[in-house]
Image 1: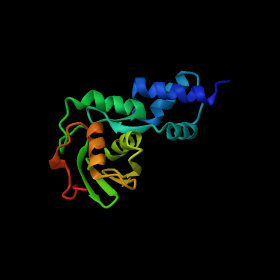
Image 2: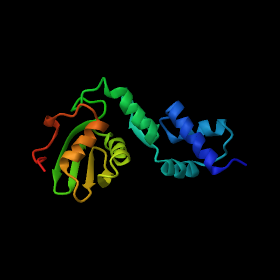
Image 3: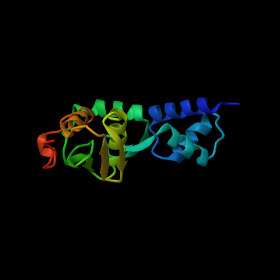
Image 4: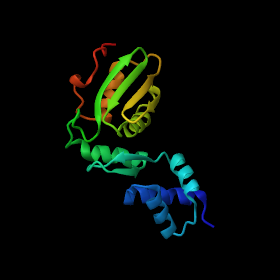
Length: 169
């Protein structure tokens, strides 16, 4: 019998190597590797592994792991310009007290939110993503500048024009 930990490791490997664009394709890859699991089990595993869908360089949505997502953004950041035409999807950020709102192109918010939560967990309590907007909740005592510096690491090339009007704090 194959253990759950082994199955989870194989799922991560399959996502990183094959970049499937649907659960059906991922399930087929698992069946080819000898795993007789249901789509329900796969859905739970995907959630546990924090696998999400992100647009690839051609704009097609693929499954990606948080680690692979970071590698993908680092691999492509040198050739991207941040802003409305960005492959990465970032449009702008603005703040109100301890809340930040990040606007993205449709479909990009979830991936950016996952990157931000992964790399900025010491600065934020969390991030809530919709299709094209992210709400971030800053920890007490964290400045907007600290958030912007971290965001600039995650999405290189952000300029002051991308910031909202109230970032002075």
